[in-house]
Length: 422
Image (cartoon, rainbow, N blue to C red; front, side):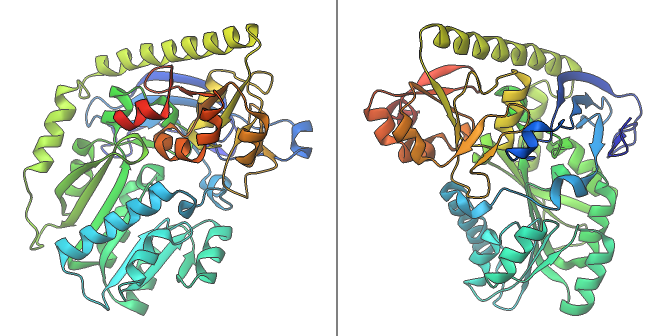
């Protein structure tokens, strides 16, 4: 076993040791570990990508944990690149303003704040803002843009330091990070220390309900250690004298949950949304291993259908390119064993990714202008969760006869008109 990883021997929420494996996506490289031309000559590190289920609290989690310093110290994804996500950040900020009556000088903390995209929305309303992010490149960028950001991993010590210097936080936000955390109890302890007595901790993460229901297996990669449901999260916060008082569903990233958490003695009271979503989870058979075994069979079908489509297209001399050098795209490409002889290039709008290669598949990553220049017959939307946005950017491609290939929840070709009507 590599020194870079550790085996998961018990559930990170309830500590149950009788965990059941239900999905094996093979050995893959880290999904965000894009590589240079020189790296093509070197041997890539790969790690097992397996998902296990806890029958006690119903948490799904990876069977291993890769050292987070390897994955997050330098990070290629920038939140503000996506217009869809920047609009989503405005929505979160508006909810906080209108629902929780935050005042001008209240402290808003964003954990894993990336380039400060979300905090910009709060700063515009004169709130005190603070980001915490382990990626040196992103923390530097955010600070240069006026968003004070601590370059560190969130933990109890960081929470205590912030409390001493800035006081309690009225709102603490963790979008797309809670699922990345191995020691959830220590993470939550830090939240409890810093959160104001009537403050709100907001988690947003892909909902395992949508992962299973829509066969979104490509959202599984080594950064995502846990696949979250409301039920196990309730148990986690109960251990820390905290409670979930509201749970929203949001379409971002293929379907996410937004969880609102407070201290047990807070003024916030639980509404019906929490029970409503837990019932949806139960009705989807997510508190039973059989629901996960059925999911695994559907994953195998997507692999078969996609590889068959690509092979048949090659036999007809049709060319395929992709859009979105996303982490989820790399899971899909590596599980399906799709290489550069099948997909000509991956277009992406993030400058840091361009002129590099996708991990494992070694498909070149280029700027999106190459779609019009090279005009492939099919464009595989790896970032399918932003399909409408990507289609708007590639109208010329479609006008010239190009077709979009969507891999999730089933393999199909589609037009922008069909997406707009969906």
